[in-house]
Length: 215
Image 1 (cartoon, rainbow, N blue to C red):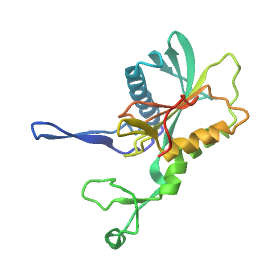
Image 2: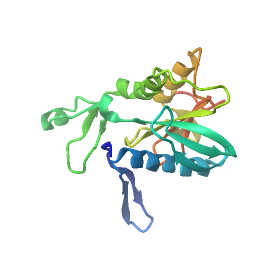
Image 3: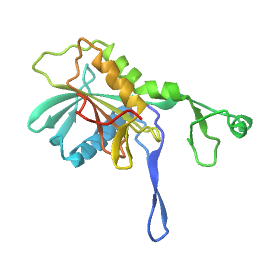
Image 4: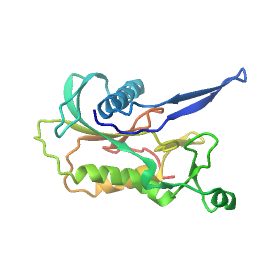
């Protein structure tokens, strides 16, 4: 079966008792199983939001234009699933480079190893470019079909929303993605979603009103 390498993702939980718990996960490297796991994580978090209806089941479609079909509030919705990976905006550093600190942001890929440098401009554009790549494949569908694009990632710290003193703000990545979609004259996807498979999914499009100022 086709293989698709993936990286570990998760977080560290700090308990009041002082206990530190590492909650790390890794998707299967078998492509079809990996995609099913990613969609299951999205569905679980989507339903937990409670404000966009409920997805009750899904099935994996044969290799064709679409990946899945889900049941969303009794309606059949086709889903294109795609991954945002960090290889377009990260690069390894030597110990000398790391110690000189010629970087503003870095990602620790493996415990005990030197972090990888992050190109912040490329990181901010990565979500937009992933969406653009799917759009430029020129998928076709009838007006009767509902089609969603779901972007998932295992990248650490790729957040689209954050709270600043109780005010919800959006990242530069999300701002750029929405600006790009706003400028399109034709658009095949009825909704576009993003999930890091840890926090609540973010609806990229249609843009929810008053979603916050760019940060």
